[in-house]
Length: 387
Image (cartoon, rainbow, N blue to C red; front, side, top):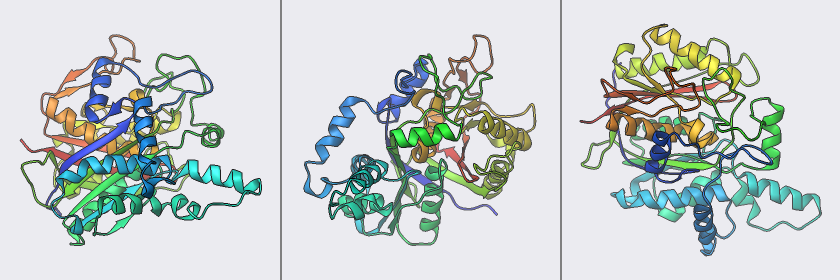
């Protein structure tokens, strides 16, 4: 059954490329990765200037004890607040894959040494502390909560935001994801799971879809979107379809045929009331892992056929895998690509290969965004350009 659309009114992000989605687009089209590949491990980090700004936020009494990822959420949330019509009826759903990692690890290390913990540890290390801090800072009165669905967190936040709007729980929603888990412990966990690229000194440490890909590159960042039920002069795009599915075949939830992702895509197409050949662009998950990329490709073949797949673009080669924030960033990039009618290049492919160079989009109305996460969570979202 076809549903009425939800509108994307505004968005903002923090990534290793800098502040705002324009910074990511500049790096993508310049063929420049923002990832480092030196000791101790390949990773993506926010620019020093953004870290300085986040540190300055701790001078505010209400934010003094908060985890860096919560500060990132507050910083991006404030940039969206100017577009809110009535804060008392605005809701918020902001999630994270790992949660307030740095606060948890630091607090547990102190506890292990017998240090008396601060009273603030409990509220600032709780997952819901992320959303409550942002809602409190923006003085929002609508429903507010955090969620976690591994690497699909960003899209699940959008799905829940759409559901909240359609249920009449609020007039508009701020949704998305934040992540700041570049710690030794997290790196070791991902290395042990054999999904992390641990090879140093590579020009492009993250290479989604490439035959010589070695694994994902962990990154930090934040990506939030403002959703509304009614179109306005500010609206950037409409969300016309959504779907989600889960599989439990393995511990990481990745099957060779990408069954859950294919199901989520079919679900999104059904909600939108369109056929697969109406999709003009795919902004893929593209983590750069051996099994994940293979499963993603299989899902696309299942839905679109071996030869008819729409143009595909990935962004994690440029800014890394921001875990819970990545899929929300993908939505922004999808809107930007539709607006430009251009695909950015993938410079780690050989010159002459189909994915190497950028591409003009003959049609640029509808984009599909996909995500896959540990535990088997898969999401798909369809956005449509308004003009």
